[in-house]
Length: 416
Image (cartoon, rainbow, N blue to C red; front, side, top):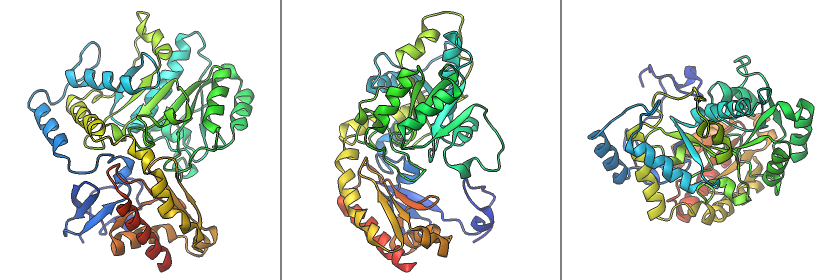
């Protein structure tokens, strides 16, 4: 294969150049390479193909919008019909009453936006010293400046220097650690706490029982804004429009992306509670001076509306919860394999197989080797993480597909 000019994200380009895996088309849970070989997309690409690939309804909606108004900014008082409709639709799904929606171009943009809303909110409330942002170990909040600065995966911060001051991390499974950190910093200095309902790229880690409820109560006690990062967990992945709903928590801010369009076009956003939005909506002269060029992009919003229609009409949102047990049951006994330390899952349609430390010590490339074997020999695409392999199939997947995933893991682990 020839060399490439394409610089791949999260890639060792010395290894990737001349060895790209090139996909050409997709259909529901399947994707096909340029040679015509079929693969089970067990990860919904990057956690986002909730409705599956190749839906003609999305293509038609995109084409129709391109024929009307392909793109136009929404800065100031400019708007377009699809952007207004998406905002209203998403607000109607939100667990907060009278929610407002700030649209972005994706998940990283949404994290950046939520952090700035939180800090600007406290400034508007007369508490400008509230600037600290607290996140959790193992958390992933995108790769923009703020997302890098609050990342709970150390490898994603290493080598970049300090992007954001006043960013702290606490243990992902200990509510008391959040209380202790807030008190150490001083509650009057803490703006927001960021939490994924289920940690995704950090290893697919469901919350410990009562964890989210307890941390939400602690944040409320100290007046700290609770930000639910739903970039992975939203739009059916956990069986609700937003995963945080499963835990009875009403957040102050929700970040979203991925599943809002199922990846057909880039779109994201932040949902703000009425209280957080109030200083900007109820008082004049206080513009929120922030926004992406393509925020509210009408064609991206048209794709989102068609995607939301499919999620509703095909009853896909609830499948994230309906299928969580069958997926977990299909993989759980892999924990008995000598190369495996743990299998995590059971909350939403996602799971992870953690390799044993001894396996990784003997073969530091074991994660990559399992992923490569599953792809090349079994035709199943897995998500390789630091020490584990994750799956998060489209919501259209069935138990038959879970058996194929299990078979691919069996063969790949044995090959070690």
